Length: 106
Image (cartoon, rainbow, N blue to C red; front, top):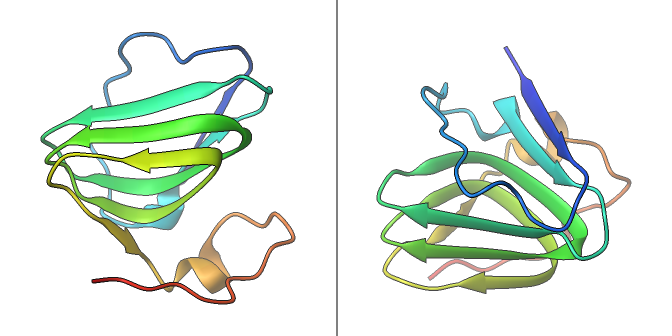
């Protein structure tokens, strides 16, 4: 089952709780659709999904690992967590007309 969250506005409400995910990044897609949108993921639970906010600011903090992909005007990763691009998104992720050309993980 795929879940799509579309958000119009200048910031996501203070708290959105994601209770259970499938562990498949393509199954949770969050879209920030306005310029000025701010999306912040904080905490200790790993996130499996995609965040697409090409005109917004996306940030993560804490020790959460992100499994999936993030697109934002600015993307800031802080804390001890890491971003792991899921290669299956190239064929099964959200279609936005972009192609992954290069990425690097440490």
